[in-house]
Image (tube, rainbow, N blue to C red; front, side):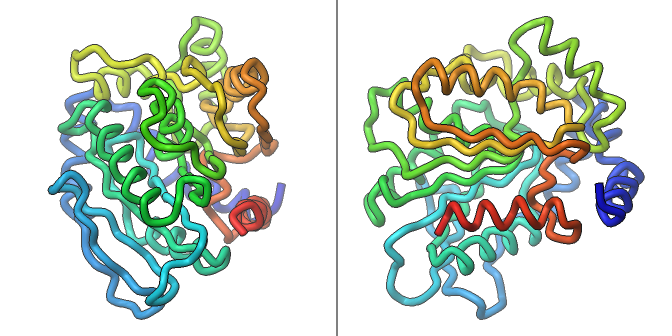
Length: 300
């Protein structure tokens, strides 16, 4: 474990993110709504790409990032993280643009409806429509789904959703899911998350059950939208998973691997010893930089 990672880990623990996600539902939602007021959609002002604003379902923004005036052959559907309740910041935009530029791909960045005020079914409806429109532009087989945390759950969940709907659109080229969230589906997973809780510097195990209530809003929800391994993995494209070994969500890595094996889905599973949630998003320490380089290599 590098010195830089140790410094970053200490800073993350001190930042209080874990305490935020351990709050009771109403207090948590009040705080993140305040945060989200500063995270509204805005067009980037730099000239590092050709940006556009595409409205999905007539109301939701999708930032399009093109490398030039003409579309590239392949593209990335980038799904930000935040527990389905926190909106993206400029760091997310920078990461998406970096992936696009370094892999030679255009990128779509949907501002999907958050579960602060929407059921998870509405989130899936928007992301599916975004993907369908993207497939019309690039062809589904040229699209890589990339997601971090809750965005990772959506990246895995979108092909499961396609299967549930009898595939109204073709499967994507691949799925790259970094620390994909999943509500524990057994007492064993809950106990294992609790055992890891003291080592996780970002996500509290208690958030899993809080998030279930937040995402469902008391409505019936397909199980795969909450617990990805419970979905139908038949015919999925290659899936590449990245987890930090010290994050509570790494507990569900085994269930995802089992689901892929049962459906003969090609997959890779990286569980980096001692690493935190979404470590692959950070280039400042060498472990994160190595994982990020691997991801860009997959996108090329």
